[in-house]
Length: 368
Ligand code: SAH
Image 1: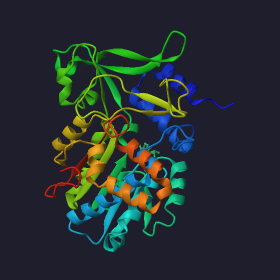
Image 2 (image 1 turned 180 degrees about the horizontal axis):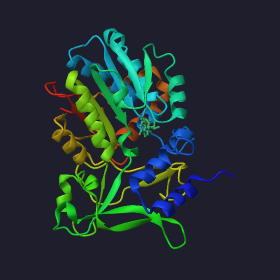
Image 3 (image 1 turned 180 degrees about the vertical axis):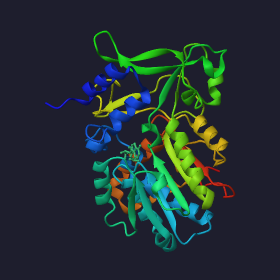
């Protein structure tokens, strides 16, 4: 029998010592042969988790209108790259394009680029968007998309980027007071977290947000160096051609301490070390840190707005009314979908939207 991903991870730890949480996440989620995303379509009722575009077409539709308004804000360029990071099954893009097609000039300007790490999901996206009526391309990285005006969107993309975990060992020692938490093996050879009792490397502590200065001894903080890379990519793109990036994800507006790495399987939380490669691993997004990194890099950053407020400003209630009028039998279903997306005890408050833009654009719709 071929070795399981878990055994391969354990071998690596035995050889090289405890691995960073980011390395553990990367192997589990993206190992090309046994990783979570490359080997399956994890979304939907039959999968492990469900996302806003999977709940209702209304989500992508109002975002399509956001795209049209953003394209107008960019000065109606003749071509615009509509780039989606981590497009899942392609449903959100399909719904966005259908709604945005109401503006024929926008539709003829659009070139779609999908940034996807999973070959399995890329195939699904191809089928979903086969009749989109606009050119659709794939790229492995944002940097591979041709230069041009761009609108970039990522829904539940940042939460699956690899995080690092650090623990405050000495609150009075600044960045030198932090140590790293890694993934190692316990006495029985099982995967577990281990605290490395030397100051964490500068490559890690450089990503600590301002909020880290509030830490008390033994507080844990997560950072996401991959976010800084994405922001670099945006700065680079926007240097020549203006653009906007919209991120929607779950997480607090202000930096909070604590371990938020979680694993989901069949819509249930399971242990982060149970069945590596076969569970969805995510961590909450630190919107304060994201905003701070973006501002320091010179991007114009919107407020962080709860999903309820953002969708409402984009007119999702009116969309629900119109949809109900055309499908009266689906009235209760549509009401339930709206509730799931917007209610405070569902996705309305936990999920947030933020927009990072090049300079000199009007404030983005819904985030003003
Ligand atoms: N946006 C979709 C899917 C969210 S799941 C939705 O809302 O339904 C996360 C998506 O990001 C998947 O498509 C996954 O394959 C992709 N992904 C994860 N890590 C990635 C990476 N490093 N680069 C590109 N895509 C990635």
